[in-house]
Image 1: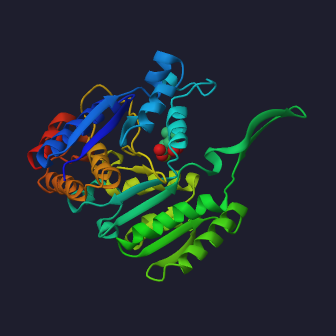
Image 2 (image 1 turned 90 degrees about the horizontal axis):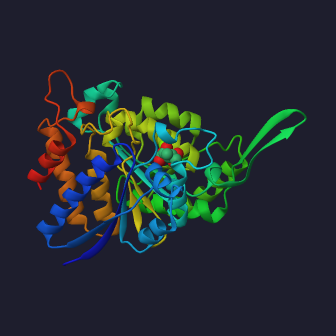
Image 3 (image 1 turned 30 degrees about the vertical axis):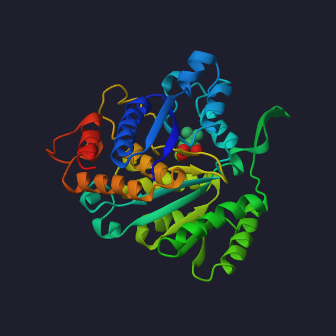
Length: 358
Ligand code: IPM
Ligand code: MG
């Protein structure tokens, strides 16, 4: 089947442009090998958009994303825009886009590659067989709850954020987690803080009800503090882990340690319909920006997720993942995953190695 797709690229800041350009080259090659026509357009988001337009996300960028088949994003932010008192911040671009595209589910797979076990600080025996898919709720919870304010009360400053969830917000993301578990090891761990939080009690109750509708999938509940411990003591025991926005933010940084480098992790943000957004989990890494040494694998694996979930090209997605697997097995290393005197590949060279194996 010959497919025509329109992909919006949002390179963003820092190393974002360096990794997104490699994602584009890889996608172009997949397109030409498999006979698909992929067209690309680039738009601003984050700090570069603040510099050009005074806002981290313009209506123009939102409109372009809404009419695309998929969005590939690099990273946003950097020291230049870091003033906590500033009213415009690069992160607003990312949050605004998640919200306006209705991307309620953020999939962050963390799978340990056998040849990279030594790059993780964890003991190799703990890492054997680690393959966890974190499904993070992305458009609710503390990130978006209202009111959010700061006020002066009796001579003290008081700040408020609101943790809020509706049952339907929980239901749609937990249902997705169950569907994804069916194609994996049929296990869902729902993570909450139900001993303390009302939102978590609603979360647990909703997850339990959905669990009852899926007799082929085993559901267990875990408190977030326990989950954060078990993620490093027994990481291989997790299959699909589903949780609310803030817990998911924290646990996915922790999960990145299992893989050895933040530079390796891809993510997919999905909504009910419309385009998905794909981005590496790492940030804009200002310390190495412009040097051409960033690891492009998080972005390239995000491209595989884009092919799978937005373009429904499973064969192409799997071919790309196999190519990544092979370069790692064959010892190709960027600086973040290199050891001893491994030659350090540049961002471009690593992408070239993938393309040579496609
Ligand atoms: C992430 C990041 C973002 C988040 C920031 C940059 C807004 O940490 O994607 O995990 O907190 O969601
Ligand atoms: Mg985060």
